[in-house]
Length: 443
Image (cartoon, rainbow, N blue to C red; front, top):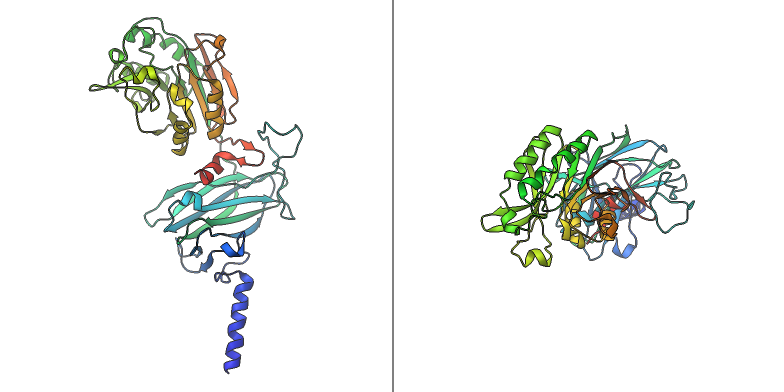
């Protein structure tokens, strides 16, 4: 009897080891576990009847430094078809879930190899005609419910030559931590609708020499943008100060105030958003600001310039300290002002906050830095400047995810409008969609 019990125990252990360490043998059919090296393999378990809705959960736990491992399963796909990915994760004792908990979708051929992307990829370092392979997809974290379950969701189009998708639930670099995945779904779905937005910039130097006259000179240009069906119109920096020979403090006003009231009427009249560069007075404090005014005519938000050049810092302007991002009817908008563009932190903080478009009133800046801010964050950047294009410096224009200047004003008084799709993704060879990957990899 004792011998039979020993053999039964050994058989049970052998069964668990064949399925993978960590008691993964109870997992649904096809699910397996893996690790880069056995010496850093974490513990795996599948719990039936548990999870967010009681339909089971995939668990990974770590009890040592540097541990990395993942659950995985391969699903058949049809090239060109759109698929919806969804899973919920719940963490315990994980200091940085966005880096440590990483679900992925890996497109493969019938032999498990990477497939050609099939669509356009932006790559400045490869010769034309070279094959660009599809890279792993990184679905983003969404909202977290009261029980600590965070939704991770995205819609992807399978590359033309893909025949299978390998779904992976990674857990890494969280000693003593635990993650559970639950309510997983991967299924065909209709293609998402495009999110088209028409971004407009105004290239203009006001000549009225006083704040009221300066702002009123922009009215016909905003009307031109409206005639071109603009959704967002960007005006330049400190427009009530330009050319007045007054001090910053003399041109500063409350927000809301006379200028936002004036532009609010125009925004409501034309049913669009306006971003205006102004000077804000808050008691004795003066800020250089970008103000977002909505189609309802009200102030939808403001950003106080964080990085101040000598001329502003030496003359009593105070820096801001926050990086707000605003929900609009076309997407998420961030704002920065002039000297902010010389530093990567401002645009990155806005991107971390979800900004898809950054509006940038800018007196002057190196255009290479404008391209860098756009491409390093994969956002659309809209600039409006007083700089003459003949100076080969910053322009009033629209930059895309790759840093490419889509269009710009060639002369003063010109209104430029570019239509972009906020659902379009830019793929880089060797990286894929860096905007999605960035949040999992950035420090």
